[in-house]
Structures are given as structure tokens and as C-alpha cells.
Image (cartoon, rainbow, N blue to C red):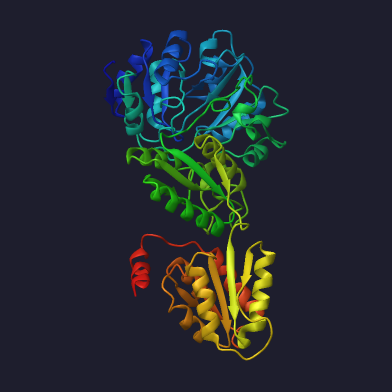
Length: 504
């Protein structure tokens, strides 16, 4: 174990850090993506020490950090015009370019490859550290290999204190995930080896040509054990916390219903479970680490939706990393390319443990009296079209019946667990709803407006709803039921009120 210095971003401390690097030591530094572990990129011994400190496989290439565009020529044997265009557009920033290496760039730094990965970080202290060191810095993420990437200096300290020479105590990283790695060895066919906050669309706009993804990004690392990585994060297990991680993917309502069920099951087994309900590139790694610190056994993650934000446009280079990774107005929707980048990290963190949350296993009970018969029939048909299993407990002909009988029958079916949710209909929706609420464990809300439908699920966690056959059209009723089904329950803030309802 060695003494690890904690250095500030002031000039005097940066000079100390630069001196350590000149002597072959290791210094962790901040960037706009994640914290890096800096070493002299031209020193094979320093590269070996970085691999050893991280416990990183030696065929996993290191990214070389530079402080000015001219440094490209110190590391790369060929610098095409496309690289200079991208540097002007995105540097300093979260884009790494892979180019043919110069002979003096040791293979210990490049993972045995004839190429070198280069980027200019967007952090003033780190740029100054590189300048003061008089060299270029190889800089893998400053964490134990396989663990979630560090986005604060405290994360670095938790993983590498006593294993490296110094840590620059900079600001938390704004981007949250590692840089985009772009293969430019064939400038006419640029290919993304690792997705990040600089998207294919943004690169294509600068180069005026199509940008593809490396096919390996669509495979599990275990599918090809002989695969040789061309960029960090391509082959080995990455970003994994100590706790088990499970990802739930699908429509919002399905995802959170599946997570709630799994959460209850894990707690019943005595396991400490946490939930990340709106993962975001800026906070995902930090949340995984926090759950580990809290002693969690399992983390359940709701995958973001793969959609396009309201403006439908990819963010420009000046807006990276903050705006380019911003969620859309619903809180879960990310630009498709940012979604792909985040899911790349999430899948690796979870070891590809993903659950497709769907409707197939969800049963909804329906019932009605004569006044709600036609409305019930229309709603039931719509639910079946959406893929729900529907159990009809109401009347099948338009005959005069007493609504409390069918309200109670449907409510008891839901309360006993034979159905997940219930929909009941009568002339106004009032009487049959009152009957349902007399059954313990039922929270039945009458739906009249879209806002009431949203609040019924979000705030009141209603497991049944009632509809008025003489108040609503079929189209209105279906719209309200869909809003209720797809709204996300707001846990925490209203749990006390829901508990009071259950105790009444």
C-alpha cells in the first residue's frame, strides 16, 4: 500500500501531480465524463502500473488524453482531415478518436494494437495537468476494473486509495458516462466503437457522411470469447456494482408494475432492494455506487423509453454533455442515440440480466350493471386489443340488475389477487364504485376527466376504477382507462395517505 495524496485543482498542487507523472506515477484526474487514471502515455512501465492498480486486462486499450489539437501528431502516425474537423467541432469534449499510432507510442498503452485512442478532456485543471507534465496522459477510468465508473473524486478514493499516487479533487463529472469512441482508421467509413454523448447524428452532421455502430455493440461479450477489443468497454464485464442489477424494459406502466412485484418478492426474502426509476447518464453510475454503500443486495432499474424529445432534434456540440443527455418532458424519454449509449452501460452493469415487462401476465377484471353494459363491453374489447387478459364478471345481456352485486363481485376478485386490476361500469359510475370500496384492500376511483385518471394511479394508487355509462362516451372511457393504466405510481410522498385508505 502506498500513500495517496489528495490534491486540489490549484496550480501548486497541479505541479505536484505533474511531477508524479514525470516520475512514472499515477494521478487520478477529473473530466467532463468520468474520472481518469493518468500516467505517462509514452512510459510502458507506467501503463503496466495503471493496469495493475485497476486490475484491468492488458489487452483492454487505454485512452490517451491531450491538451491541444497539435498533440494528435505526437501520438498518431496519420491525422486525416476528418479528425481535424471533429476536433474543431467537439474538442475539448467527450469524443475519442482512434487513429494509427506512431512507433514511439508503446503497445502497453494501446493494448497491443497498432492504433491509439485520443481525446481532449473538457476540464481546465486536467488540461493544465497535461501541459505541466510535458507528456500525454493515458487515462482509463479511475476505478477498480469492472466496477461502476467514478464520477466524483470520492468514488476514486473508495476504489484506489493506497494503490495510486494522487487524486486531483475536482468537481463531480457533468456527463456521467464515458466518451464516445470513434474509429477513424478508415476516415471514409467512421464507426462508433463505444457509444456516448456525442451521437452518430452529431458526427454525421460534421463529416457529411453516414456513421455506423460496430457490430460487436449488439452482442454479449460472451458470444465471442476470442474477440479482441478495439476500444475500452467492448469485451469485459464493466460498470458492475457489488449488488445484483436487474433491468426492466417495456411500456412505463408495465415496467413499474413488474418492478413493484419484484420489489415485494425481494423484501419478502429479507433482501435489501433499491429502485432506479428514471435512469440518466449523468447519475446512473453514482446511483449504483450509492446502493452499494447502503448495503443493497439488488438494484431494480426501469429502462428509459427509446423515443425522441419534443423538439425531435439531436443536441449540438455546444450542448454536450448537459443538454444532449436531457430527458424529454415525460421524464423517461431520451434521444434514441443517448438511450442506446445509456443502455450499453446498463446492460453491462447488469450482466445482460434484462426482463421484458409486458401485458401477457396481467389480468384485469371487468363488471357492469345494465346501465354500464355497453361501456363495459367496449372497454373490455380495448383491453384485450392491448394484450391484457380480461376476466368478465358482469352481465352479458342488457337486463335490469343491481349494481352493488357486480361492484362487490369484481372488487373481491381483485382483493383476493385473482386479478391485478378492475374496471366497473354503471349508469353514473358512482354507486358501483361505492360498492367496490366496501371491500377491504380496494381503492376504487371514479374517472371523469384525464387529470382525475392520472391522479387515481399516481397519487391514490387506485387498483380499480368506475365509469359512467350514461356520462361518458366509449371513446372518453377508453382514453381515461388508458391514462390510468399508463400513469406511474408516485411512491413515497403519498404512501402514508394510501396506507390510511387501506386502514379505513
